Structure formats: C-alpha cells, structure tokens
Image (cartoon, rainbow, N blue to C red; front, side):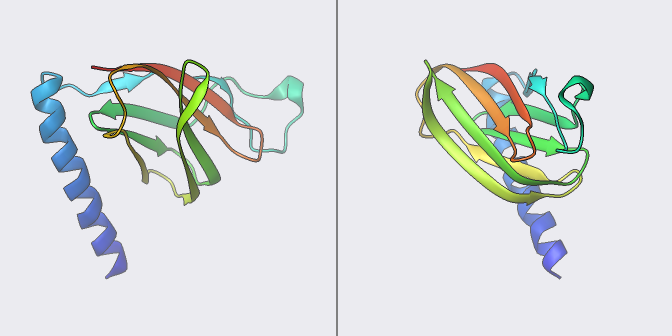
Amino acid sequence: MRTLFYLLLCITLVGGASLKAGIENNGRPKTISMTGIYSKGNVDRDEIPTDHPFFAELEDPAIYIQSAETVTDLTVSIVQDGALVEEQTFSSITEYDLAVTDLSTLDNGDYTLVITTPQGTYLEGDFTLE
C-alpha cells in the first residue's frame, strides 16, 4: 500500500511538471550533463571511475535526479555565481527512484547542479532557468 502511494505521488508530480515543461520547453525536458568523481568509498583515488549512475533532467520548475543504484546520504545543491542558493539532502535513493528538487523560487539565470555523498562522490553540471 505504501509503495502504491509513492508510485501515485511520483506519477502526479512528474505528470504535472511534464505538462508545464511541455509548454515552456516544447515538450522536451533538458538533460543536465554531469562530470566529476563517482565513488562508493571503497576504491583508491587512482581507480575512481569516470562514469556514474546518475541521470538529471530539468523540467521547470524542478530537477529530477535518478540513480541506477541505491545511494545513501545524497546531497543536491544548486549554486549560482559561487553561492549556494538551494540544498536538499536525501537519506536514501533506491535504484531508479526520483529525487526531486524544487526550483520554483529561483530567478531566471545560470546555475550549477552539484551532487555529493559522504563516500566521496562529487558531480556537477550547469543549467539555465529561462
């Protein structure tokens, strides 16, 4: 029952955001390309892989982040001109769950999405709110 509730909640949130994004972005969400270090905390620095399991899309007024594997203590930060403007921590994101960060209070402009974990992951990608 709880799983059904969360599934319906995600469908409602994504559906509503998709409708608004369809009007503003001609029906296409904007993928945020991320680079950096992905670490599970159990590898040497020389062995850190460059690929990562995260996928982020901008669908005004939110960023939707998915992970292809379970991640704990995920921090999502939004930075503008070197200053932190929004931050949200998720205790656990299971495989293919959505982490949603609301951007409705932010002004138009250029921003950087930063994803970090205590295990050493640091990924970032730039996006623009129009």
